[in-house]
Length: 238
Ligand SMILES: [Zn+2]
Image 1 (tube, helix red, strand yellow):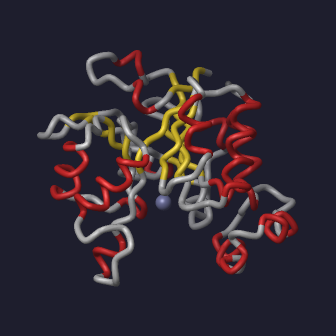
Image 2 (spheres, rainbow, N blue to C red):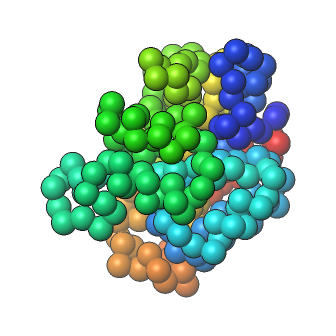
C-alpha cells in the first residue's frame, strides 16, 4: 500500500490519490517528548505523513527536513469563537498568519476542532494554502470519498478516520480493512493518543494536568487495543 502526503493530491489526476493511504497527525500542542515518539514511530515505518503544526518547536525542522514528511497548518480558532481573551490573535487572519510564519511554505490545512467558513478560507488562501482536509465524514457512513475543489480553487480532501472519533462509535471497521476501501482514504491521529495508546477520551481527560510529564503519561499507557496499536497496524501495510 502506498502512503502519500496531502499536498500530493491533484484534482486532475485521480491516480494521485485513489490507490493510496494518507496518514495525517494533528500535533495539538503535544510536548516534544510526545511528538518525538510519533515522529520516531513513523520514521521507523518509513511511510509518508502530513503533520499539522500547532506551535513552534525545534522538532518542526526535523519534520521539514524529512522528504517523506509534510508540514501543514492546524490553527485554533476556538478562542475567537468563544470570545475569550486572545493568545493566538484577534482575527482569523491573525491566527493563520502567526502560524504560517512558523511554518513558511505550508500547503495543507486542517483547523483544530474543524472550524470552517469563508473568513477562514480567505485567510488561508492568502498564505498559500492549496489543500484542505477539514471535514470528517466518518467511515461508518459508508460514503465513498473523493477530493473536490471549492469556488476559491482550494482542493478539499475529506477524511474518514480519526483516532478520537473511534472512541465514540460503537462499531469501528478494522483499520487494515479501511486501508483497502474504495475512494479517498485519509487517517488522522494525535501524538498524545498515540503516546497513551488511548482507547477512550477519558484516558486523556484524566491526565490533562500531566500533558508535559511524559513519564506519568507513559505509566498510563493503555495495554489493550488503542490508537497506538491501530497506527502501527496501518503502517505495517506501507
Ligand atoms: Zn486539533
